[in-house]
Image 1: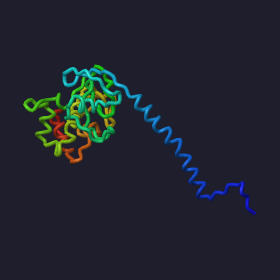
Image 2: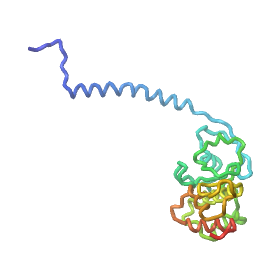
Image 3: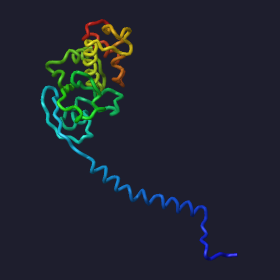
Image 4: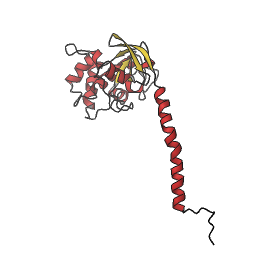
Length: 211
């Protein structure tokens, strides 16, 4: 018996109708979500001392220190590698401590003192660590070298301040200048070319120890 007042629908039709109705809210809310995101973008002034020179910038609050150095101050020596803090190519010195500049926002460091590879030395007056890298061929492609050198300088500073590492035998004693310490402390800087032994030799010479 037929029931003309009843609506019949197949299982396929039901699924198609459900999918279509579910897509409607997404289409309606997507532009609104994009509008909210764009309106939330703000800029802030920040003053940084980079390589001894004061810079006053107005930056998007989402700008990393790495991008501020490269894109706004045009200091391209600091490299963008993984952009996730895993390779160390972006290492710089911030208020005397080495950091991954891709992992911190520039506006968080108002008045901070930043030293990049450009601020360590010049072609005519190399920093001792730069000269040691050249002497011991501590690089091949050179992409990671600025981060390696900045990290090595910061590492020796940490040791001079008696800051222990994971491999320090005695956390209360002065860290020893050994290749074990150097390798552990430099483990956050990756060299895809594999010049690790040369890098350790360069660091050892600057630290005035035998590897």
